[in-house]
Image 1: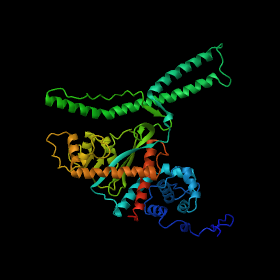
Image 2: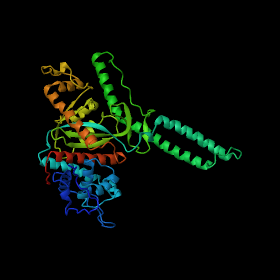
Image 3: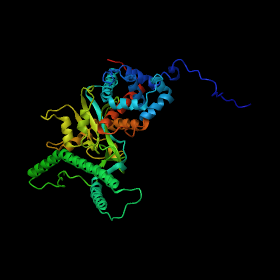
Image 4: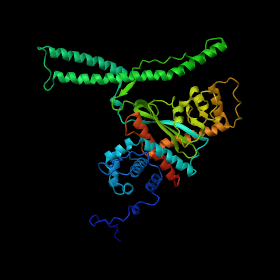
Length: 465
């Protein structure tokens, strides 16, 4: 019996359905995002109120387009423009219109207020749908490195900048002397002394600007590190006074305003930094993206971006970035990279020393993966810390209790999978925008898209106020 094949006819005109919804399944995410955006208040959108020029695309359609494309792994405005032609769900979302990449990029850059407002409103919808608790919640906070829209090879270190400045000044002096000497050897064909001087002067000006900014950053870093250094010295002096002998361990080094030889400046995105990436075995030009995740819903409740290469100073500002939808936070789960006595105290007490009702659960040191046989054995509750115990001892006891262990286990089960979904399922590994302000805007868009994707997979229907 002869094989049978489906007839593929490219020549007969295709009769499109009267409604593109017939080509998109009812349970498709594009329907959910269109319905979700429809219940949001979009008054924060920037539009041309005069109505001059070409007709504008509606903010509801543009916002839904960005959210859907980010949720499904397309971030480039040019690729999003192509999807309006190539993707049936995107054609449905755009009602068969085709915004160009410039309009898409301009809308994304100009609507920070709209994106932040939409982020908060989606959390409000989640609260109304009984997905998100808003009072006395537990959040897990962590950071992940996201590549900047710049190459690390476009950077210059402070030490190299000093060397280049000296070299360029010497070359400029030589070229000036050559120009004044009528008997000097001419340059190769196609080259002129004035042009070569101009090129080196331009390069010298850029490197001087880079060196000045590196020096300014060093001063700012010194000012930030000074309170922690003073606190360490005060604690050390208090121990010496209490014991009557010199305290052991290394004496804390005071911060310095002098930039290190390896501190860098990137000419493409000056506000990005060289940071350890992956397992810490290599470095990339990156930003430090922070997120707070509510452990039961696994929704992002706070999103911000830092240019700091580590998380040591990120606990307090990330917690302060909580959406106003969240009424109160009861417990905060963080890894050892966030722990410091000052940060924990700032979260758990007001400046007057009044308890805030929040408790931090933080590892005080790195632990190996897996559990030892000793950790598997049943053990009684640890005795409470002795009077006068250090903040570190109190924190270690908090994590050794049965309740503390059970709660702290939720950290790696919530925030780390969220970063995995953003980087692997959504494919977001590099910012499209540049500068800390625009990068924060884009991280808000990523977090908004993740939250709606999460709510879609939970099968929830969002309703307006």
